[in-house]
Each structure stands twice: as C-alpha cells, then as structure tokens.
Length: 123
Image 1 (tube, helix red, strand yellow):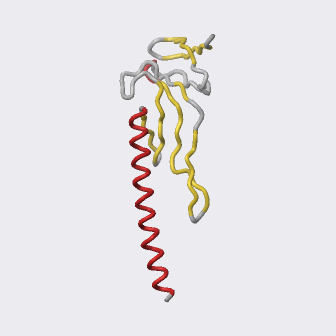
Image 2 (tube, rainbow, N blue to C red; image 1 turned 45 degrees about the vertical axis):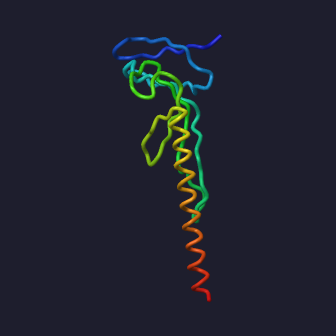
C-alpha cells in the first residue's frame, strides 16, 4: 500500500495525495496546489579539479502531480546547473549526456594541445 501526504495550500486547502517511495517527504506548505512537488534525494555529479573536488551539477528525481508545464505530471530528473534547475525527460537527459560527451572530447583536444606546448617549452 502506498503512503499519502496531506499538504496545506492557499487555493485548495488541505490536499491529500499519494507519495512515491523515492520521495524524501519534503513538501513546502501554504503554497499553491500547482506548485506541489515530490523530491528525491540529491545526486551530486562531482569532478576533480586542480583545486579539489567540486560539484558540476546536481540531479534529483522530481514529480509535479498538478502541473501543466513541461515535462508534465510524470517523474523526471531535475538537473541543477549554475544555480538554475532544468527538468529533463529521458530523451532530454540522453541529449544532455551526449553534450557532456562532446565537451569531454573538446577537453581532451585541449589537453593534447597543452601537452604539446608544455613539451615544446621544455626543449
């Protein structure tokens, strides 16, 4: 049996909805029904830099059961990049991964160019 949660809203009063098992249980109250969201745990995507490990982006499962906006009422992955959040459906998430692969290749090219310059300077 699924659990439910009751959330206080300014436009619909008390709203009781099923809560998915992955939801952390955080539901801000006194907002509008359309703003109700289920949030999963944050999954930080970290990278090693010359100054240590940093978070490049953070992802989390989310669902907005009353929204009419993209990506709809189903579960999606919210990706935080540079302080803003971008909802992704599966296809959009795959396109983001492909873009990151492209950027990784560009970094490899730059790394090779830098290695050549460093080597030339040492000679």
